[in-house]
Each structure stands twice: as C-alpha cells, then as structure tokens.
Image (cartoon, rainbow, N blue to C red; front, side):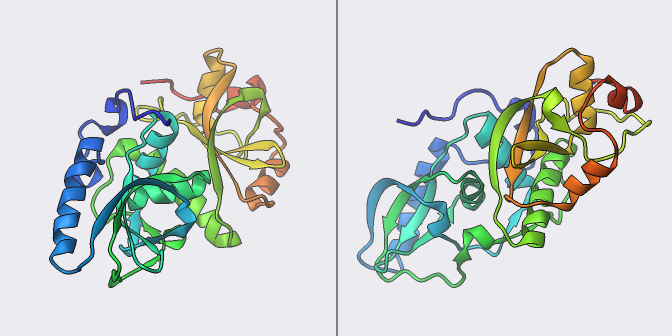
Length: 272
C-alpha cells in the first residue's frame, strides 16, 4: 500500500499565495462532498465508487491550461517529499475519465509514467463543456508574480515543455541521485557567481540520453556541491529518448565532466 504524504513542505511552500496552496487529504474529502452535491443538482444516477488507480494518459482535463510554477511545485513535492494526495475524477457511461480536481498532479504522473490514485464519481450522462487529454494540455507562465523560490522549478517545467513541443514527444521524468563526475555540462563555465538563496535545496535538471547525463539547469549548484566535497547531487532527470541540441552544445564546449578545472572558472558565491 502506498504511503501517505509525510514530512514538512515548509522549505518550499511557506508563504505561497492562495493559488499555489496544494490540496491535502482533508481538503480532498471536503472537495469530494462539494463536487457530488453540485453534480447531483444537474445529473441523475450519481454514485461515488471509491478510490482507484488510473493511467494518467487516459485522463481528460476540464480546464484549458496549467500553470508552470504550480506544476513545478507539484513535481518537486511528488518526487522529493512524497506528496500523494488523490485527484477527483468523474467517469461517464462511456468509461471516460474527466479530472475535476488535481490537473497538475495528473500531468506530473504522465511524466512519471505511474498510475495515479483517484476518487471516482460515476455520472452516466456527464459531458463537460471543455475537455482535452491532460497529457497535451497547454502550460503557461501565470499572469501574476511567481515567488522567487519557485522560479527555478518554473524554469525546469518550461524547459521540459519546450523540448517536448520541439520534438513532439512526451518526456519521461524521474528522480535520481547522480555522481557529480558522471555529469556533463552543457554551457561554458561562467566567471560570474550568482546567489543561490532559493536554489540551495532544489534539485538540478538533467537530460538522460543513452545513459549519459547532461546538466540542463544547475551548473553552479553542481559546482557548489563539488566544492563542498559532495560526491553526488539530487536531480530531476528527463528523457525524450532522442538526441537534442544541448547534447551538441556539450560536445562542443570542451569539458566532458564537472571537475575542479571546469568549476574553478565557474565559481558560485556560495550557499546563502
């Protein structure tokens, strides 16, 4: 049986605006009652059928877009903080599944290629005004300000979606702790250090191609880890199972790995 979400999220969730507050198990049961009440006012034959595990590729979104900062936050919490609150889904008499609550969680599980737990409400005649497969739902940067500490996660999501759109492939994503000497840089070393105030606890982004690991975001964090004597670093890893332009960039810069030679030029200011 899968463990419930545990641990504190305060390092990343404290002080976030209301639109970025994520559902808890308690919230979900309250929302479930509200959804059933509202559906019962419009449809007949409604029945709650319990919790099931669903293939996220089978799910339809009932909202038009996802927000990049919230998607990055959910991805981080699922991979690193065991966040596993079930979504709420309506099933109609054709066996179609429509997400009522939990769109960002469902899209993360598409990336992870893992089934997602869902509360199922059976509504025989249900047909929403808007629906599209959640795996192809558009992702946008929110119109209001994104908290600074979520910008690295927003950038991770935007990078993955850009490469998905470029190559027409849905990425597979996972968590991995990678030996630093296995990582390949994809940009020239920078002589200018940058503050790591909100990046110090966040994973780097790595592209996997045939087992080789290319750092897409987090070069300075990787050098900081090396300077601290760490042997490995937490990463969000993704692959499209295809050669991408950043691999070519890595091959051209003349550095095949993160080592003291590369990092002595690319020296971060340090953890703050």
